[in-house]
Length: 297
Image (cartoon, rainbow, N blue to C red):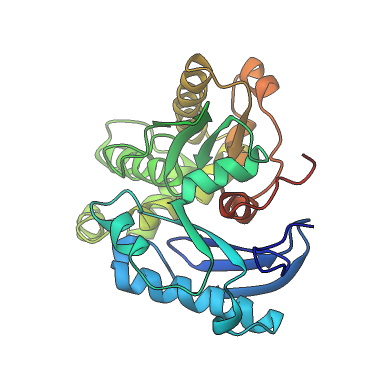
């Protein structure tokens, strides 16, 4: 049993602050969950104060579920992953926030995902969701590949699939390429009017583009040639990230994110064989960041 200086059993607060929501989990040293909490988005793009409010709400809810007041949390160590922590000044501002814990360690959401995926050991991940990014922890060093933001980066992601299919639909409408079932469905979404697509584009976010990804996947499964080509190109982009991480020294590589299982089926067989299963999730990584022993070690 891990104990604090005053002899009380040490506990570990894991927080995963993402762009769609914030999760918190209070655990014992052996990984037993004794409290959980949820809150709204915690990404720093919403502002550092809003980010901290969500983080604080989530961990307060977890403390409440465990029956622990904020004033009684001095034996708890916290690990907090935050989307957008690398934004200028964000880490310093969050580290300056008052908290009730014995210690609080901050990392990006990608870092805690990597820690969790490999049980605190060295390893690499490729995140494939709305965006994409490669990340590795090797001998105490953090290596990042891509993930600079859509549309200049995030190749192979859901947003990338959406951008590719909307662009192809416009070309097919002009007669510059063959109209397929996929492209016809995309044009139907815009009332078969490129002007509507342009108006949509002026306000569209990466999330809006990524909403077209399931349509591309569905038509690719049905054999649509354009959908298959887009999926092949996306997989090639993810392969490049993965191979680069192996070249940089990673021995374990896991594919994670909402589109991971879909993209994995399109990867080259040799790369698929080299993939390692996730050992844990982002909250496991945050708990390890907090100082909880890696389960099984």
